[in-house]
Amino acid sequence: MNCPHCGAKNQSSVSNTRHPPRGDHTTRMRTCLQCLKAWKTTEVTNAYLAATAEKLKALHAELRYAKNPKSNLLKPKGTR
Image 1 (cartoon, one colour):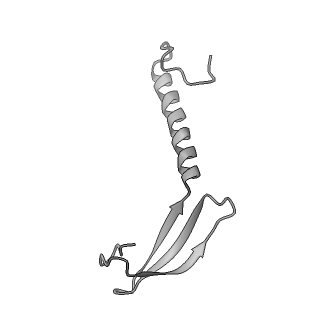
Image 2: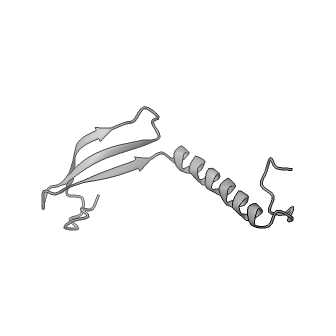
């Protein structure tokens, strides 16, 4: 992990780790061993990323259909 403050490479330590009840991400507090500044990182699971991508695709299809409701090609799944 590179320090966002001084740019030191792989010179950080984890001071705190939190796992929320949903379990779709992990939050860590890191401290740079060179400049001693701290920052927060969030790591998400691949399953969470895949589910978010599917939700965004469905939302995009709904927005395109709302702009042109006469087109059957743009109609989102599950609509008539």
